[in-house]
Length: 279
Ligand code: KIV
Image (cartoon, rainbow, N blue to C red; front, side, top):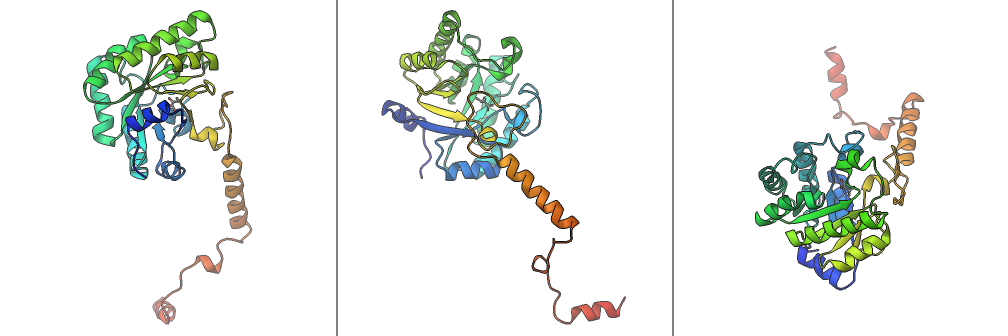
């Protein structure tokens, strides 16, 4: 399988084919995502909640993101990988935004970066694109500003806020982004945004009328227990499976059923008696 480029993703949109992507933060998950034929992998700053147990994404650092991107890149050499710029890695200045976007590329070999926000991050998007990198925009529910939004809440539910999202989307495309992610927005608003833009518009919790769908791997697999957004569909209950396996292992050890002989190593013939002679 040849790694997809932004042009393949654009062709998919133009042909009316859906792109599918998922988050991954570690080697094993990324390997399975590539084997399953995902079009893209996002190393999301949701790793703050899914891996580190933070309450939100705000504490996540650049170094953490780079480290997880490196692991994902090693596992999924043939998949388009997007690094997610964490809180304060692009908000402070355009220069810092370009430098940090560059770190994702130089140190972790990502194919693109994603950052949250509309009008207020347009200078950053433009400058990162001018630096020769690919940017994906992200509007709607933007978890890094959940404080301002009053929590993890759906966005664009009134005419006024929907119009503001459309203006943000158009400005992001105009600034040079190659794609846009819309999160937790009513489907009809996402459809209008998709119809008004020429770049691919992807959804997480923004309905079916998008050019593709993103889901968080920990939600899809049923291993994130803190809360489940309305837009999540669980495709497995690995949380229960893991718990069952750990409990069965603990029971086996406590009852003397593990390890058995087949789990042990044999000494070289005749060596045990020599060993005992000197004790
Ligand atoms: O960090 C992440 O996984 C994300 C998704 C919630 C869109 O940005």
